[in-house]
Image: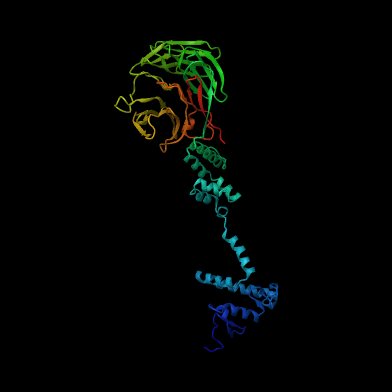
Length: 491
């Protein structure tokens, strides 16, 4: 091949007739490259640091002195095609080379554009469903931090219902799937972590007292924000727990057990009888006689027209509520009958099963029992025992090694409420750990356990932001007052 027709090398400058003029040293690597570039730039009137122009001329004359706009665009297109054909390594080397040739203006331009290109808002660019899928892998605290990035991020993250519902469930909160508000569950979670933090710090409750009786208070019953108390001062009182006001006060016999509804009060007494009273007039409308010991437990059902009583004479009696006559007497207990469960169906007056936690007679069940129609739960020195009501099989035993002889107040799907002589405890049944406690005063001790009770218990199946209010625990005090433990209002 002759000199006139050979193909020019990549580092050579050619004239329009395709003849090599000079090998371009500024395209070579190694020492002297920048000096060669500067020399070449002076030949064509370009300042490497300041841009094109006759030795210090302003860069705005670039196209006039060097290349027309059309020619520049053609050149740029050709360079772009060549650049795209390079390997990644060659592209990187080319960029490094161009950066080394750039002045302050070009570097500033590069910096500004790179910042925009590299900071891609993926939550804004991705489809919403894909964004929600990615967010599910983050913990709630990280998501809350991400909400601070921008209004757009806060909007997307707050609307991720599944994430916040799961976070609430993990905290032991109930989920109502009928709520359609996309932003609702993030608000619920924020409320939930506040309440759980209060429980963890033992700051979720507050106390109050009811004063009005002049003798010991032995009987307590709570329902729908109202607390009934029966005393040895021959009276029973009905209190509004939220205000501490006494709504009704009627004269009765000595009360060992009480239960009420809107119209009437039923009392079991140390005089071995059961009586029914009218709230509005205070009149006794029925009197049930037949026990030979104090009546420590009563329950009734208006639809079945039945009343049941448990006594210190070791018997349970079934009565006709309206007539006051004894229908049946159940025997078999060898100790006081201190608890009978709510009547939900017709009584067949047969012993279905005797439940125990040990053959060792020294291992006793605590006075308080839990029964919801499906499970029977009781506390003992060996722990919490849960039986299936259909089969009477023991479903689980929850050991509490750090604290002995805890008595049961309430049992739910998520939480259990327990207490001893010093504290009120909340247990997370999923982890079998005590998550909170509250100090108790020196309350009146009772073998039958009726001088203390749980208040609202729906939260034991899971908090929901509304059921953690009102009465938690009540007990009678040696000074004849009633000590109340109440949920503290949300901050």
